[in-house]
Image 1 (spheres, rainbow, N blue to C red):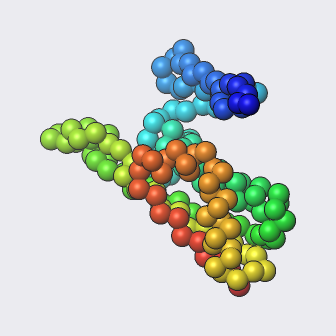
Image 2: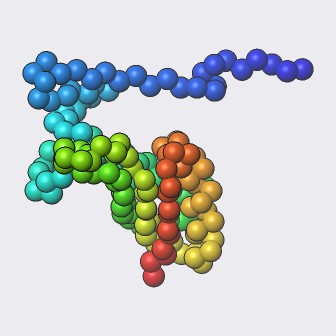
Image 3: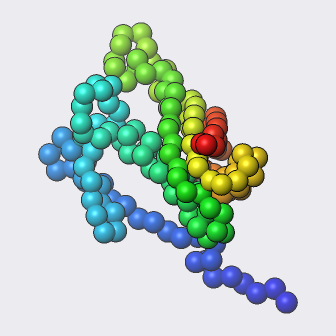
Length: 157
């Protein structure tokens, strides 16, 4: 007999709110916290304020790393250390800088991750495990449908 599953078993709703009173900052409220964003994209590498793009990068990189760590802990796989880098390729950046003659919509065209791991296992086993773990990462699974993503795993000796 087929039993109907409650909607909570299929979907979990997350709610956020963004507000700007002074039109300089956007205050984004989560369930238990908040953060401020001054720019959607930052080209000044000396700027310390995080942009929306920075928050996106931090979110997806940390999500991938934490998913692998959590799966390793659940399955007692034995990853001892992990580190990652992310390279974002932004297409049509000159439009964001209001350069005359450039009107193409800016977009992320590629994400390139390098994940460095230390585990007392052979490289093929670690890479297979990590690829399986990525299947449980919602941000990765969503973004891989929208943009080219490359994930390279490297075992540290």
